[in-house]
Image 1 (cartoon, rainbow over the protein chains, first blue to last red):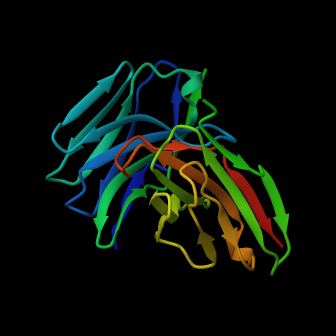
Image 2 (cartoon, each protein chain N blue to C red; image 1 turned 180 degrees about the horizontal axis):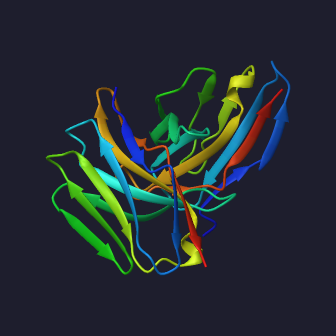
Image 3 (cartoon, rainbow over the protein chains, first blue to last red; image 1 turned 120 degrees about the vertical axis):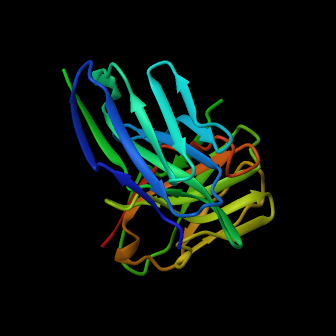
Length: 114
Length: 113
């Protein structure tokens, strides 16, 4: 079935450094790729998304890139701050026959060391 | 707006017991869904609804029932709880489609003994 692989599972960076999280997806028809941030004890919150008609999207310190040929997309966080520490999930919208759904990656625990 | 609310926040059940996880949203969203989150497995779709009176199965529907009698509410029922249903459950809503921004509730942590 459709799946999304996410790497790394944990990432530790120093405050001010950049962080990159990578995801690959299997459904070549996928056309919507959101990223969610989940803080401890809370539900996931959308931080940025990209659709298949663009290759890159930025929002302040956060950017997402998409390579449809290679079927992978990445989250880039620059000038990391301690409040960026959280679990990050990528997802891909999959046209899976009768069920159209978001397929989530397994998450990346980002720790930003002050 | 309260957004998406879920109750209870925590629940402990014994095997075989039944219960209903409540979910409500006040954003007039058509699309609502239930996910379970397990360590190392991300979020998996249980059931979803594209509007009042319409529900459908997701990836892992076995052991769960849903109904959608109003736009606002989307309860998830466990008819006979099993230890394999120990998980954190999230309800989400979006304007119309899966590809609209999904707003997640705070979650319900369920333990089945």
